[in-house]
Amino acid sequence: MILPWLILIPFIGGLLCWQAERFGGTLPRWIALLTMSLLFVLGLWLWATGDFSLAPAPGAEPRWAHEFQVRWIERFGISIHLAMDGLSVLMVTLTGLLGVLSVLCSWKEIQNRVGFFHLNLMWILGGVVGVFLAIDLFLFFFFWEMMLVPMYFLIALWGHSGSPGKSRITAATKFFIFTQASGLVMLVAILGLVFVHFNQTGVFTFNYADLLKTELSHGTEYLLMLGFFIAFAVKFPVVPFHSWLPDAHAQAPTAGSVDLAGILLKTAAYGLLRFALPLFPNASAEFAPIAMYLGVFAIIYGALLSFAQTDIKRLVAYSSVSHMGFVLIAIYSGSQIALQGAVVQMMAHGLSAAALFILCGQLYERLHTRDMREMGGIWARMSWLPALSLFFAAAALGLPGTGNFVGEFLILIGSFPTAPWVTVVAATGLVLGSVYSLIMIHRAHFGPVKNDSPLPGLQFRELSMVLCLAVLLILLGVYPQPVLDTSAASMQGVQQWFSGGLNQLASGQ
Image (cartoon, rainbow, N blue to C red; front, side, top):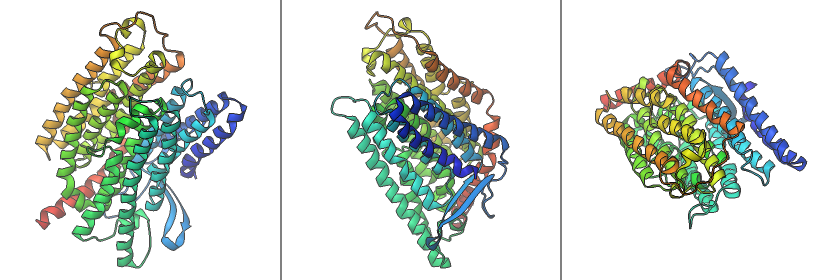
């Protein structure tokens, strides 16, 4: 029963926060903090006690470290089927950690409708945990769509007014339309797969293990794979489906940005690893060169657009497009080293992007602007924050000793044998990354002084959040073995499916 509780705890906590608002603004914050802390502790406990050598692999029934199944809509073969392997336990633990930080970083920022804010925040995180645990495809789609509505409210009601002509309502609507439309494409692909399976077996089912056995013709498999890929590409985000991301980030409250960059983008990578590659291995192998070129383009394009930004949050948002390009290359490289690098990179990017958005929020609270042209000379006016910004900017560009370096290094090493030119071009993205990161630090924290008045320093709450993320990033960079061990069996299964697709492709040619 522990798996359904992982999903129910945020939902129940959110409702309690909403109702606790009548007793003042402080009680909902504490309920939300306790709820997320409980989720994080349960994630760590499952990680510590699970046998993660059990993971789905081709040619056998999927085996899981933890599993829960209850019949739901029997007529259509839909069940509440939750399962956990090494990949999902890492993602659930990351969700719990960033959930705690989301609550802490909005402690002073959110002052109106505090209970309703935390209801939306908890429900986003509950939906995300559902995505990471759902193995029934209907249930997966349900949670995938369920994340969108609370995120819409988070941006629309508590977002910042953006640059001229770009309001928070516009950003929220754009986010909702992009992700909703792509979700509908995935629903069509899921139904297509279910009907093909029904025609072969006479049984309606949305069960992962059964659908893995479906035999698909070449054209059908490619079309269905594209349906899944488009849905995940929008959330990833893959250029050219990325235009919702900078607006959503720039207008979202700090907690919204932390969740968006730290967790919601990871649901797309998780979807590719869990569903797109295993269900459609042959089509994925055929599509791999296109996906890798899209990843390279995202790395370079995201880095170049980061140069052009004057809004510090938009700069960090575009850098996320660039960093997630590495994950896309790794997923379609067919190398287990690169796949494990992708998992490390997802964890490290979650930590570093969350930290940068928290620091941007702390700057905004003091300066009331996100425009780097209005900043300058902050290094001398404020302790801690500029130095921490420099550390996380360096970590994001892959500083040795941080988790990002390990992730990117493994991705490049693993991808090189299969796609040397892709890897070489992707590596230039690291050079561009160092330039835009240092430009951001120079403009905001050094540069000409706009105002001599000293700024209030970081409070204990603010400092402890960011230092905790810094310690975790260094720990991941110096000792990534627990993450690699946990994800090894899951990534080996994905790699075997992909290799099977490549072999099929080679024999077909």
